[in-house]
Image (cartoon, rainbow, N blue to C red; front, side, top):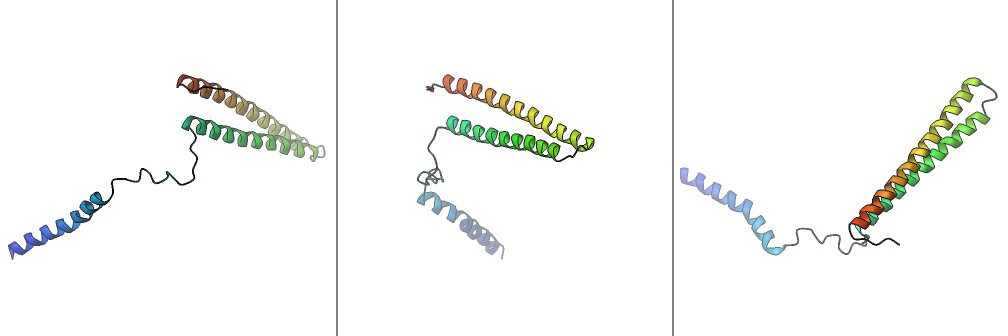
Amino acid sequence: MKGGGKMKKIITALLLVAPMMASAQVTTDFGLNTFANSGLGTRDLKETIAALINVILGFLGIIAVLIILLGGFKWMTSQGDSGKVDEAKGLIGAGVVGLVIILAAYAIAQFVLTNVYNATGGVTA
């Protein structure tokens, strides 16, 4: 019976290793070309990152402007209530500060990305 247990271990090991050996002989792609013809963009990584940063900062700018508009709407509809006016002033102030931070982030991102692009051999227009 001891020999039968050893035989079972050998057969089990072969059954576990055989699929790996078969797949190694069939393909050597390893999924590297999976997205080659998928229709995804072929832009340079630096350009893609710059575009993504621009989209995110643009979205944040829209949100900041909406906060300012909400503050203005609350102020106009406060009917002289000093608590609502103070709340509206706080919203407008927060929106303006947010907008300044977003514009500064945009300027810094443009400066850094332009210098990285030039330092790595890119040509700017």
